[in-house]
Length: 232
Image (cartoon, rainbow, N blue to C red; front, side, top):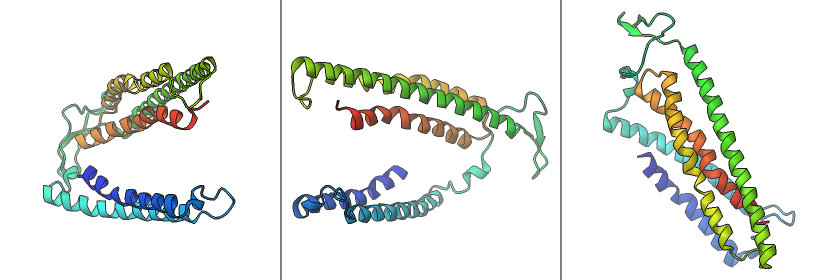
């Protein structure tokens, strides 16, 4: 539901950006370089205001639609009545159970400060993974860049001319993404288990957050280097 809503509303900035590109390319080419001459770039300001307004509008419509869907599917308030996960365990060092303040029944107990310690440890592990990913990508990128320069000097070709060896090397560069994703996937599950969440929703939310933070760097750091620093 969210992906369909998001995809539909992306049409608005896509159409607006395409319209601006048509206007600048065919009717107002003097604005192609923005405020390069020191003048105010009203096109960029207008697009920034449009995108800001679109973000607020998109967020508001999704909140309304998600609430309607939750009522339609009967999931409204589901998180408040969840049962404990079968893998959830009580505190090993203290009292494993406590009394529910609603019905006075015994329930498993796990102190929040212990979970916070595990969450801090998870954050450190994820940070180390990100450091490794960025370092390896950076090292490989500069090695490929050096190879590209050597090819250009050796063949006396135009820098924009495609080079077979370097192009293949950049394709291999993309394999770093699954190479890091596979071990992180196993580590993320282990870290999440150690945090000992009570409900499935809490468990899945924490797991998704770990993957999201890591994959932002793992999936896009190589593209960032290639897009902004590829040419020698």
